Image (tube, rainbow, N blue to C red; front, side, top):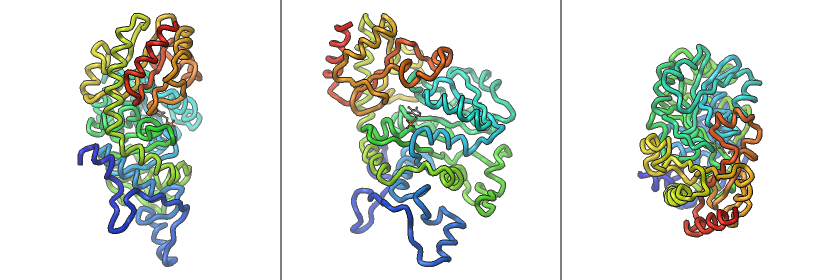
Length: 421
Ligand SMILES: *Cc1c(COP(=O)(O)O)cnc(C)c1O
């Protein structure tokens, strides 16, 4: 199936007389014929359902759909994108370990990595998203267990050279984790470029309608966890009757372990209702991504030609530093997110934003409606000036998330706001 078809049909195939639409299984628990049946499921929880803290048929249908879209062998949904980032790493790293991350990533992720994981004894070594192979290699320490980056960074819009990062990760026998939130699998499938694990904040384009916060972790099944660096995968898990994940689950060791250990213990699993909403968004994802890209191309060109604008950052523009990488990794478009710096700095930026009528001020991005945000005073407020620079953010920068309104209406709104400054 092509991706448009996968968006509609993967994950759920009704049989004779079953509901056409994936049903909402609103139940915390499942029943068994006998005590033996219950015992069997505790011996191997992947054989049947136990409890909706970590598995539910509605959520699992969505997991299967997203795994198919990304070309992975399995997926696990989480109650937020933050929970996906956290679990993707805690499934690999423990106290005393380190991992490498590109520094141009989502502000909330910077906080998670630099502050909260540090408290748990896990060190994040930040590197420039444009780091050379040499610089990446030099950053790796004997206790480094993974490399992390965003395909299209929020909000810096840096395009990651996924193949370069994958090469250095694999030379060192560690996995590459890619946050693919902005492109979605419609515009980029990182596994095809060597990523081992892909995560998303599904709160953005996947849900698309700003109705449900969520996240997902997808396992490519390609990483060899038996290479000696990951004893948690190859030695008996005392908390699960001595199961050895790589022996029992083979290629699915990572994603099964994430569910059986982390989801069991943390319980950051979405509800069936949440997954149902996410699925509605996913059904039109391919169609929507195409239109976001078309609208954003027109808006970015308009902004670039405007003399009140100092600079426009959209990797689909020929003038952009990441244009070549975008042609390689995002050939069908760079999503609907544009950032630009208005002449006149912070105060003019704020006046401009307050003059917009159609585009709303939101602490959100990738909404179906056009929305706008000033990262320096909102999402990235907690970062120091130094960290702001490392994230690629100017104090006067505006993040403009192009929606699916008629592009002429978005242009009219921009024109009247420019006239007001
Ligand atoms: C929003 C976002 C997150 C965090 O996701 P939540 O669903 O808000 O928890 C992580 N990564 C990226 C790239 C994001 O845009």
